[in-house]
Image (cartoon, rainbow, N blue to C red; front, side, top):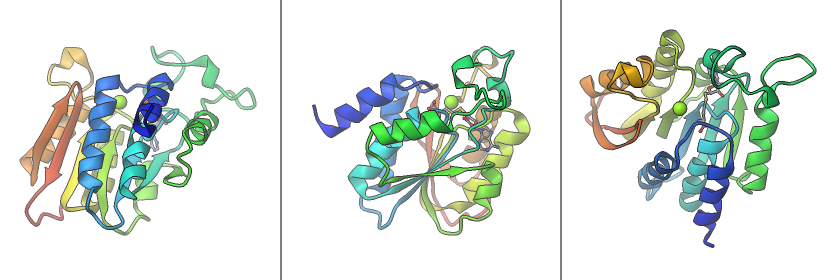
Length: 215
Ligand code: SAH
Ligand code: MG
């Protein structure tokens, strides 16, 4: 088994919301974006138990990149009790709150990706306000409510320079397949200086062209 196969197998076995083909496409896109870039940075917004983090970590390990994996680890609104994806195994008995940080840390440790994956535990727009340098690849898969999704977009997308790559998850053209906000972000990006590179399932990969530094 190659290292890549080992990591893909681990990602597939990790709890989360990333179908196998979309995970492989996420890896391919991050690898292509980081390959040949000096000190490439990957940002992941929304890590949950580390499934997508491992795909991104595999690309980081091969290219010398670092993944900044951002999550407050208490789950999005749609991951709380009463929603379809609520998982009682992830509730911390000490306070009754969802807490995916221990599972995420275990995933990254088992994957032996601790040297190229850094966890940033906190509110995504708050973290973004303190990240200064250019981001090579940004994967947005945080909360899917209107305000949180747009807050992530507005916080992180300005940090992508020309040639920077934006990946958005859960983009559904048909409202019957899923919520609107990720699709709205995708449409908005296309109406600015992004062009589409690839689409796999609900994953969309876009690249920033021109000199746009705006949103
Ligand atoms: N990429 C993951 C799934 C992410 S689920 C996978 O491959 O399985 C969405 C995640 O976004 C949850 O873990 C939730 O805690 C996180 N999240 C939601 N809103 C957030 C915010 N404002 N700041 C940080 N993390 C947030
Ligand atoms: Mg998702």
